[in-house]
Length: 251
Ligand SMILES: Nc1ncnc2c1ncn2[C@@H]1O[C@H](COP(=O)(O)OP(=O)(O)OP(=O)(O)O)[C@@H](O)[C@H]1O
Ligand SMILES: [Mg+2]
Image 1 (cartoon, protein in one colour):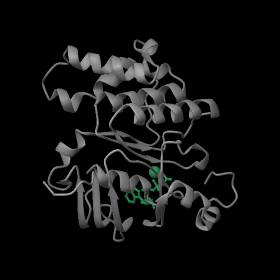
Image 2: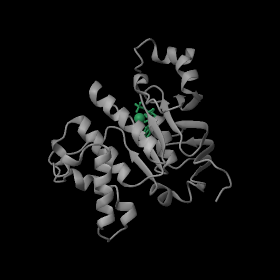
Image 3: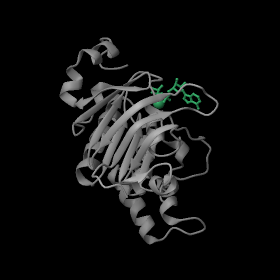
Image 4: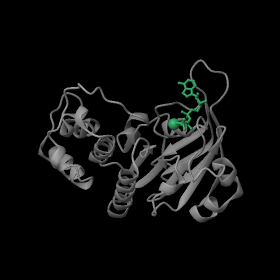
């Protein structure tokens, strides 16, 4: 166990995809304290998804050192991942997949239940609680392929919450949502952050939907963190204006 209070600590991290020569993210230094709510923004291809997947150990960094919950990521990947709720970008489901919403949410408990074991009452209690948090209890027995984009996004969030994570990594949770659904998910994230003792990192393309409880913004460009600071400071900065290029807060 490393002796410090950071929930995430990345030191000079560099990640290269297998078979590639050049790193996709490099010189990444990041410290996140427990309970922070951070937005990560940057243009397409900047390395936002790569950064999230380096943090949860799905990708292995080629240089530097990374710690999550005080444990070195490389050595404790699966242990760390059990405590991280990850909602991947553009997750698609076969519309004919024979799963009900409650089953998808329960699949978030797999790491906690363990292989070759069955879900118990406490697992179902957690599923109902998480579906309740996102207002989707009434959809429990609906086939997963029969949801709107916003409803599906809420089920994915609920699945991540059912895991009872210490850290929530959300990759573009607002994409494919209309204005009303974006607002709903934004409100929901604020509520989850307020009620649960949880740290949230959210990748977003739309500065109009930085949840109000998110006080820190990180800007990634060409694989590097080019800005890291308070919401007010970043949103006012020239660099942000040039990246967003007067595009109404959207990249
Ligand atoms: N499996 C892979 N193998 C090789 N290169 C990859 C792989 N996945 C992503 N990349 C490249 O890494 C770079 C960063 O990709 P990444 O998905 O992290 O960007 P991003 O900031 O999440 O972009 P977006 O906003 O489009 O989601 C891109 O140039 C991408 O083409
Ligand atoms: Mg991405």
